[in-house]
Length: 577
Ligand SMILES: Cc1cc2nc3c(=O)[nH]c(=O)nc-3n(C[C@H](O)[C@H](O)[C@H](O)COP(=O)(O)OP(=O)(O)OC[C@H]3O[C@@H](n4cnc5c(N)ncnc54)[C@H](O)[C@@H]3O)c2cc1C
Image 1 (cartoon, helix red, strand yellow):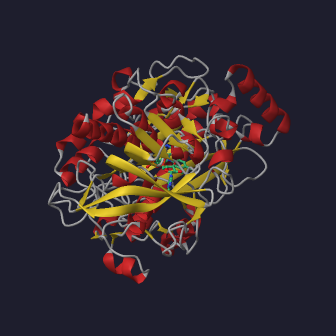
Image 2 (cartoon, rainbow, N blue to C red; image 1 turned 90 degrees about the vertical axis):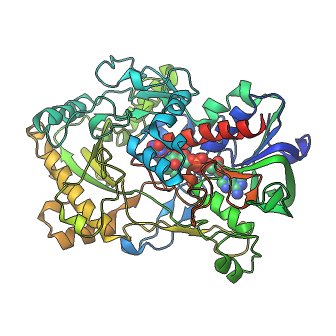
Image 3 (cartoon, helix red, strand yellow; image 1 turned 180 degrees about the vertical axis):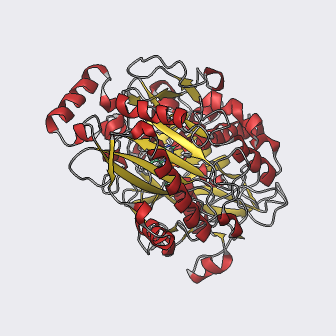
């Protein structure tokens, strides 16, 4: 049942307490309560997603994700030395469903080699692509696009699930002129930009149709899929909203496992102006995401001893990797004016069309509002094998079939200029740079310091310059003749040093951070959780969310988070049910 008020909860003693009802937390809540004999409490800091129109209408998703809304944590990063010392809003969902209720909805799984590398790093073959693949299928319900267009040749049905909670579909509104030119380019320049029928097969290289966590014109999130009314009504599931967890409390010496000498009996949270403690008799599961989870661990005395001591926090367990190793994708957008009025600006710069499009969505869940400010395709590419950038660093990608770059193809411009534009957005999806999440004070409710380490490695900056050349090559294909006008910034006229400086001054984060409570092999001298997602050295405590991924996959991160949560739920069930 969903609770708005702590006073209505039947009690504060459960088998499992899940911290965070986000992307992963909602999966766990749903899967664990399939067993009617266990009781589960979810503590979520944010409000409900129900009735939040911006979280429902794909085209309006910016209205729910941006800082300054009631649905975002309003984080700001530390000045990013590799990005001209800029600070960035760091968006995180403060709402049931977490980031899955406000993200861009792109559904990309990553390369098989990403998961095979997780298996190697953890020594657990269960994280390999072949073993994880059934969890992708379990999570997914392939769905026809909102416009019911013929999707033959736009995806491979063999690699998709049909009965899972999360609806996935190809974009449901045609930006025909633009889409045709993207597809034409794959024919004109097939060596550089081959067509890939399905980027979610484990072999993403090439250009393909983007898939979205959208069904029947509406966002499909962890909240709508895993906590749909019949699940959230289960008598063994209680979800408390507006409950912000500060730390784990009631630490005891655990008698159960010598390798995990400590255990926490309770979870402290703030509701209104009061503090409460919820107790878990079986496990506490942290699913507060890559910012919230390490913050709660450190607030609880689990982290780098010297950093904790400096803030006057008593160390329970010296686990220096907590909050380290933050791994994020830098994104850089390029726009061109176009000789056409069939772009998203035809809606965003025209109040009448905007209102018509919204009315159409309301009427029939069709029209341009069924997609987020849409990218119709994405491409995944590698650096040239002979690139001099490899003199700076060995190849950070997990293998020859995994990309270094993502290029998003978008029929709109970035600079909010009057007129019509298209954009090619380039991301470095195998970054070398690493950042951290650290505490700013011993006040457990103070926002932590978020350092994404954006372009802290010169490798990433130089690699991005090569990615930008690739984008301009794409735009030089005959398919774009007569359609593309001038780029809003002529990057090709810049020297390499100027281009690098320009990238550093104009890139942004991808909101894909992972790694801050990373998995490692059981015997490793680093890492936060073992391959079974149990926190090293602590009994009865797991982390199950995006923070356990030790390296960011070459993909938008929700699909990887969903499979971590699905497998994590199976692991918890194996232990207790
Ligand atoms: C703006 C944006 C756009 C994105 N676009 C895409 C995209 O298009 N495709 C894609 O694949 N990925 C995208 N991502 C990334 C992806 O959504 C995330 O990687 C993933 O959802 C993270 O899941 P999680 O479960 O780890 O964390 P979250 O989904 O963030 O869940 C954490 C939950 O815990 C709650 N919480 C945190 N701290 C506390 C606390 N102390 N007490 C109680 N509750 C707490 C939060 O409110 C939240 O509900 C995007 C992310 C953002 C922010």
